[in-house]
Image (cartoon, rainbow, N blue to C red):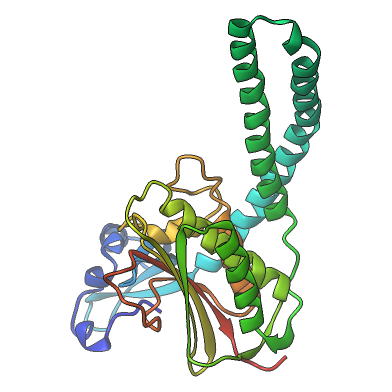
Length: 316
């Protein structure tokens, strides 16, 4: 669970693995009311930098030789808390989408009507200012609509309907579309075989690929050097991995796993929902979201960021 080799843990104090537990242990031993339960919540960073949250219960008892010892139990709350946050954020997203969406259309239509009705009556200088203002209104209304659609999409995420089929056809379809849309980017597909028959929801896998490729494209927006995106598809013992790599600026070195939490983003105009949706879809496929998956055999010096999803190979 914590990805620590057992040989590095034998003989170590528990504070070596869980530094945040030290103060709670000290308080439990200082309490003269032996047998009482002390509870606390701690966070533990794994070797892959993912953070797990534990509910810890400590009971200090006297032993036969009058020395004291502690019984410590752990409940992993990571998934429970994540699900609670997702439910809360989904409700917030639903409310935001409802409240914001209604006035957007009349704002845009009013700006367009002003443009049509009064533009022709203005002199050249006034027309330039008028065009700039109305275009700004229309453009920003479009940006807000995009964000509202993201909120709605996150709030109404359907459960995956898994059907066995060739997932490579979905990958090829999405890559072809993005090649046409981004002619300045080189796209490469690296796969061990031409066909992978696995249980998946084709529409949701398209959504995953579109989100990951969109992130990759945006990561290279200001890049003057050659732009390159690689897609890797490979099968392990129990999972199929699909990953998207890019030559952009890369992800933050610390706490990059938090980027999959709703509304957490390192992009100036990001909604923080793209990777949250990708993670939800991966989990619905009995898999997970992976940062820099080790199974991906791509030239590391070419790519700065690799984000992928695993999909269980199990039977339907």
